[in-house]
Image 1 (tube, rainbow, N blue to C red):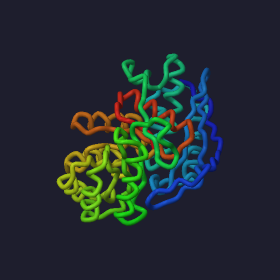
Image 2 (spheres, helix red, strand yellow):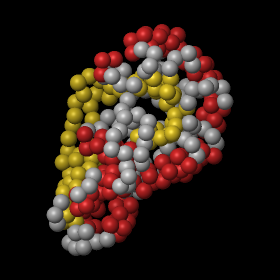
Image 3 (tube, rainbow, N blue to C red):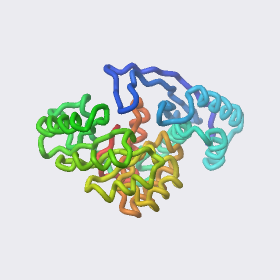
Image 4 (tube, one colour):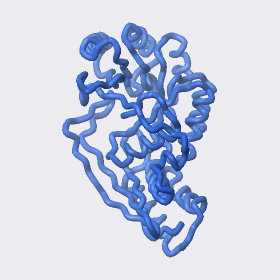
Length: 308
């Protein structure tokens, strides 16, 4: 593979309306589109670290990309493994940049083979992906079978009232995914889950702070609602710890917070081996990272609804 140059093109996307979580309100997304030029093809990735999820800053990603450009300047033909070693050297603590670089390279390799990234990894990959909707962005008429709901802004009685309203609005066939962004302690989480058990809940996402595996495991003993984790998963080691502690039923995997495709794929294989369901989600990214996440889900034959 002959990499001629890597370009970055900054962007800023203003949201039509603010996207509110239990802890933060996002008004826009910014980052840069990364283009890697080979002799015959151009691969595209997206770098957009999200505050509250990624530790690296956008400026740090720019600096590291410049160092990578200097490392590969006039290097000529290079093996994929050697190229990824250079990427790893400069992106050890920058998963958003790592994921973008690898996405662009796999985009090139897929184009060379005349297949999408999903089929480059797995010729027997899924051809269709199911998606969840988001209350506030989607309506019952959109036809989603799973709706994500952000709760935890108010007291538990308000949350119960809201779920009563949503259940009537969407119908009893629709499942809900409840996300409280780790805002609850164990006692509140048990009470919250008990109050939600009468509704059609797919899972509750990150009910307790990410590092508290003991309380996540304890919570699973007190509710029949599945417990999903996302911020708790940052690498293969953290995934293994979650499994060892029996702290989760569902892995909600955000590729931009993990980085390398090999690590993402290994986490999914480890989860599937231990009967843990997997969901791939993006982080309010542009179409480039959303498409990359779709390719990850398809290549790993993810059957559950994916989304944000």
